[in-house]
Image (cartoon, rainbow, N blue to C red):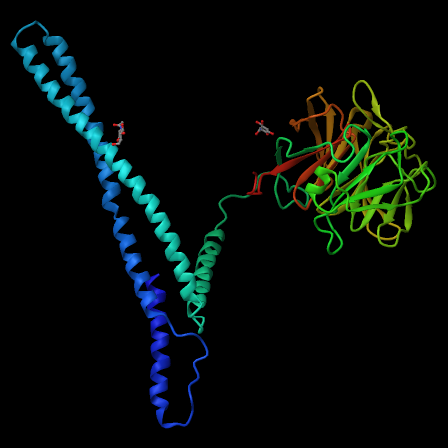
Length: 466
Ligand SMILES: *[C@@H]1O[C@H](CO)[C@@H](O)[C@H](O)[C@H]1NC(C)=O
Ligand SMILES: *[C@@H]1O[C@H](CO)[C@@H](O)[C@H](O)[C@H]1NC(C)=O
């Protein structure tokens, strides 16, 4: 703090000197800014040194020595007490020892009282100093506005650069090589766990529409960054013909839909109707299983045009390749669209894959194009849902009404499959009809028996795990 003060003064001094040197010229020195408040600076300096003296390290040392004193004193007391016990023959020695111990007890009590008062004093000092520092900070920020030559700012920038350089230097000495294979394309490292439910709402239609999906567009159009979308299967729990929007998460929770619906077609169902719940919104377009077809539909919210991508021959559709729990299947969950950091994916199954999960990357476009495809060895009907997070496919299974387990993962880069992921999700309703990951905020959005629930995904290398 003192350093910039000196520099600021130097700068002012230089300016003044130049003025006096140029006296003989006709030039006029126009002071553009306000005059520098020297008195204020002095006050700040005084306050700073005051603050410093309050924070003298002696105070802490005092407390520490008192504690240390107590620490040493107690074993002595213990020794004397045990000696008294041995000597307790009712004779003179015992009485003397008792005196000694009584004195020791008085001393220890004094120590404790001192410790108590010092602690209280310190608490007081900490509280007032915090306030003083806050005031000082504000005053310095105000004074900084007089720093028209930007000296302080530059100095701060230099300090930051120095610190970054230091960190950079330290970072250049790698401590160890990673022993695990690379985690796909994920910069966050491994998926570690999932939080308790963070959002839990019945939304606009409490208890109605058991099937649906919700979330946010990972690649939103400008001005729609905070929007949330919801698709409800209004016809037979199978079909939907519009996407409903909420301008914020709180409006979704309280059930106020502004700007309302964007409709695909007035009839439901018909060609290009949404069939099944596992749809996603990405880049201003809804991706979903088209009505009565083994195909992915892409509905552009702006142009309202639907384009179609046919999946390979043999793809199971019309409730022939559903997700299931042990007791029942979730109807029309043949195609599960998913989003992650790298875009849109589709999970499905085919006859030639004997009902096992197949994963394909979708490349953006109108119509979208089928990218690379991977085959897995997990049976789709043994899975309740899937999602992609940071390049890895995860699958869930039903444990009981309160718990769902993320039990399986597949890394398309290495081809590695794991059946022992063992991450448990706490449910607030028994069934999950749709599950999708939002790469924007690492939230997992679940649509559960008409409730909307979200969880925070916790990765190994992400700091903000709150
Ligand atoms: C510490 O001091 C306060 C105020 O003097 C007193 O109320 C409190 O009982 C003391 N605590 C102990 C453990 O002596
Ligand atoms: C995972 O998170 C849940 C809370 O959602 C917690 O109860 C559990 O202990 C965590 N598991 C591990 C292995 O950290």
